[in-house]
Amino acid sequence: AFSPHDALDQGFEYFKTVVFFLLIIWSIKDVYWLQKLVQAYLGVTGIYMLHSFVEYTNGRHEYRMGITRMVGVDQYANNPNAFAATLVFTLPFVWLFLKLPTTQKALKILGILYAGFVITCVILTGSRAGFVTMVFFFLMAWIWEKRKTKFLLLPLLVLFGIAAWHFIPQDKRARI
Image 1 (cartoon, rainbow, N blue to C red):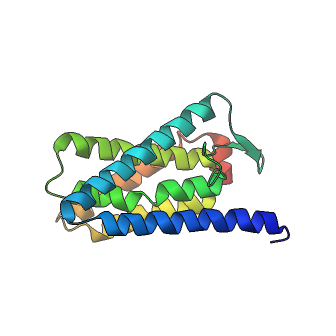
Image 2 (image 1 turned 45 degrees about the horizontal axis):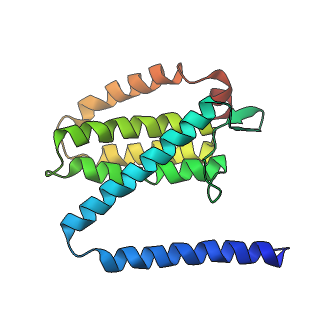
Image 3 (image 1 turned 120 degrees about the vertical axis):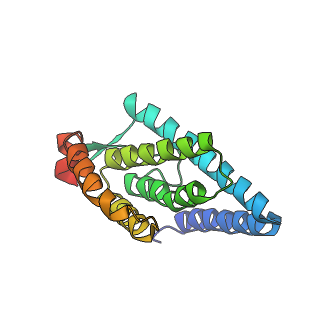
């Protein structure tokens, strides 16, 4: 870094992340507590996403690349691209959570709503990398699906994608 002070700040943020990771690894004893940790993680990220969305609708955004871009409410990953990546990286946990046989039906509905909200927020960030990563994730999830009807589902998903594309604001469509 050009500034030693900035390098020290970034190093400290990285150190906090490593310590947090180690605390999580040492505190998980079995599958039950891992599932509870994933639920808590998705809940906290959902609140973070909801707060950022409310702030975006109230005018807190970044104007860059010719469009308004949704940002996170924190200081660590508030860049639109970092915010989109944070949200997209939660999708594998949602997918796993939905696949667990022990997950209750109400929580599965919340998981589906969460995934839809992730899609909305990633589009509002205007992050091309986030959008491509999200599409890639959904493509991989479709490939890993073991149901016999997955090939019947493909035309429906393509039609849904085409219809949803028309609901995306024009400036975000042009950016993506």
